[in-house]
Structures are given as structure tokens and as C-alpha cells.
Length: 112
Length: 114
Image (tube, rainbow over all chains, first blue to last red; front, side):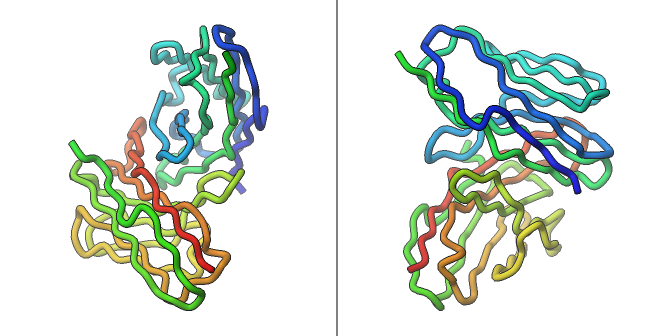
């Protein structure tokens, strides 16, 4: 069964600090990996999408990395802001079928 | 640009009642999805559609039915609501599957079954 495991489950950091969220997956064949940000009470919003050939992609203060060999991805947030407080969801899609498997998310709290 | 719109946003049902959630997208996407999200859990796929007139079961389809009569609309129905269906429901859409396609989500519909 395809799985996506995220860690940590929750994280609290101080404003201005950096943090890294992890995503390990067993989805095969691999098509792409996406990171979403979900604010409380809102729908998920896409941050980055990476395909097999991409090993890093940035979106402002968010930088995602992908190691397709070890089936691991990370989302690095630089100079955190209070508005970064949200759930971050890793989603991995299968090749051909297009089916997506969602991780349970990491809840990030940024405190002043 | 509305994107993906869900109605209603909030609803309280009594056990056994029926209701329909409506999802509309204005991006001409071929694929549409319904997910449910329970507290502390990831999104789970209920049903999906790869085109007008087609639907398919996802991970947790029991107790739900769907219809895609028009390309822009995807309806999720609960025929006889149960307390276990208390959840937040998200509709989403995307272009036909190609590597790198983004899935766009609606804002969610909060359903409580008492």
C-alpha cells in the first residue's frame, strides 16, 4: 500500500527561526511530489511541485527538496513569520494512474 | 477568478437525513475530487471523476454517492447521514493527469451529523 509519512507531527518555533519538515513515501511508480499549506479552516494551497528530475524548488521563503532514490522530501522554511502557522501537507502522486496519497500533515506554530 | 467553490459551507444534519454538497470549478478542469478530512488526519479520497459523466470510487466511498453531469460541477450526496460522516469535506479539481499538475482545493464544507 502506498504511504506518505510526515514528521514531526507538530512543531513550535519562534518567529524568525528556520525549520525543516520531513516527508517519506513509498508511492511507486512516482510521478510528482507536492507540498501544500493549509491554514486553519481553509482549503490546502499548493506551495511547490517537484517531478522525478527535480531535486529542489523554491517558493519565496519555502524551499522543497526531493531525493527520489531514498524517497524522501523536505520543506525548509526560512525566517519564519507568524503567518506561517499552518498545517503542511505532503502529497505524492503515482505515475500513470494519477492517484495521490496525502500525508497527515505537520502542524507548525510560529510564536512571537 | 472563483477557482473551486463549495456550497454549503456549514451544515448540521440529523442522523438519517440526506443532503448534497455542490462543487463548482471555473478552470475547465477535467478531474474533480471529493475528500474528507477528520481532525488530526490527512485528506482521504471519497470519490473522483476524470471527466463529465464518469465517476469512480476512492479510498472511503461507502455512504456517499456522486454525480458529474456537467464538467464544471461535481456533486457529493449523503443518502442517510450517520454521525461517522461528521467531517470537513473538500472538493478539488485539476487538469487531466500530467506530471506536475496542481490540485486546486475549495474552502471546505463543515458537516455535523447529530
